Image (cartoon, rainbow, N blue to C red):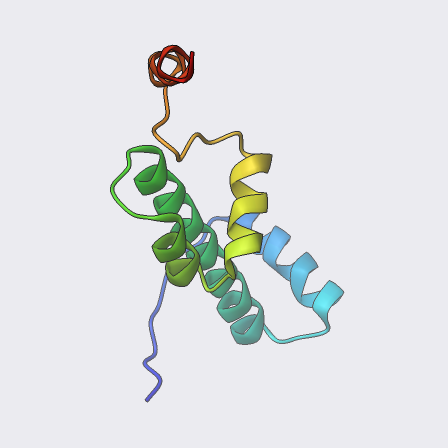
Amino acid sequence: MATTISVRLGKDILKELSGVEKKWQSDRSEAVRRLLVSALQQERINAAMDNLANHKISVGKAAEVCGMNLWEMLDLLKQRNIDWTGYSEEDLERDLKLLK
């Protein structure tokens, strides 16, 4: 069931919103819904990236939360240069010593 909400928007935002409406050939409600869905998806992605960087969730869980497959998530991590492995230089040096 849909719920109606109201918001107050400044003139600059309304002008920009009108431009989006024209570009998408949609009414104001549809434009606001689409923009809100996009912003919420971006917020989910940002939260997942933060949780991954802090080793609070796995890559698989992040992909699930964001509605992506694992490969898409790995590509996004690479694009944003986020270290999700928790594997430090010290770990590498220790492992190299063990291999010798």
